[in-house]
Length: 424
Image 1 (cartoon, one colour):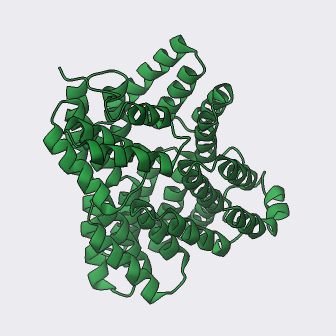
Image 2 (cartoon, helix red, strand yellow; image 1 turned 180 degrees about the horizontal axis):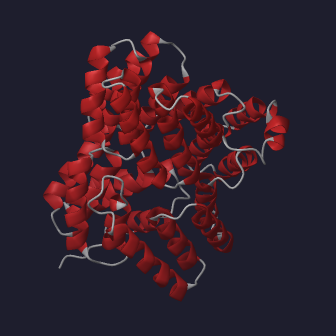
């Protein structure tokens, strides 16, 4: 792992001075937005400029966490398709927007249509893979990702798509390898993209208990793209794993100031709770619940986090299960299956809970919290040996995770400890 960190450091060292000079300049997405707008000022009927503008706005939403850019992107796509109905690039931009909004079923349908029109488009295969994985269609996602590599070996998109799939398959080292290769091929001027990749690598290291490596990677990410809310949020997670809660509170607050959304509110509440600031924590939990509930029926939501909140904090298992069932209609990836299984367990529906958690485990995932959930569910089903194995695997995956202490207690008590069981 030290070798990987060294490789990554070398990969960004050549551009560090240039990056530092560009801190005050517009971001990559802002530059693309400005370029498209300049073209449209001179040629207002140039449909491709609207496509370029839409894609830049989608990327700007990722840079800032401001989803209002999606509405602007939709308007640009509609103008493009009015000027030139059915143009491939406009419809492709719409798939990108749908994926960003987590409208996976519609994205998959439209990507399939584009794939029939142009089967050698590498990007379209990537969109197929992303949507298929989100919908739990991992075999199809694997095939689509392979087509990306077959058509253009070693391309960045294929590495990023493959890394996401390898993570779900439990191949963390393989995911890190692909991410490292993607980083090395990402141009220095693509500062947000580089920071995004570094932050993803840091998260995988944190989830494996390699906190020092994660810390170093996030420092690099923030030097490349200062005040990046994704990096700040992940650094807060690292500080919580290190039990440096007061620092985590400050980082979570900084991330919130950069881009407010329910997941960041939940992180802030958890950091405050860890720091012993319970009154503020409860207030922030309430803010999280209130804001997350406004998004329940939207594809882009915080339903997985809200399900966990109702199981573990608010102790409303029936509401947790209702929300988890709604989310299962939108997506069926590993995280969603885990949340659904956890809500079923909290409601005493152990037989169905173990079926759902086994589906998630069947993909290959080895994430510590999911394995802990599997152990608790197996315990409730009277499968003591399986429960012990899952608890042990959870600690092997990450001995510094938030639930590591609960796992240790479960092992100490021979599977007799149950963290949550809020059946009403």
